[in-house]
Length: 61
Image (tube, rainbow, N blue to C red):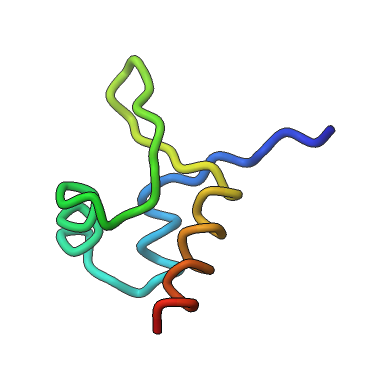
């Protein structure tokens, strides 16, 4: 079974084309994808979770 790639916030905001403040606001209000906070404070999002979140947004549109 392949390991699920972990994306950085920078990779996600580049893909979405939104400012960092927008993405952080989505996370703070519970509208962003579920994330993993590492012991060093860095945040990562599993690719599968990111794709699930995007698909849910498409269904809601």
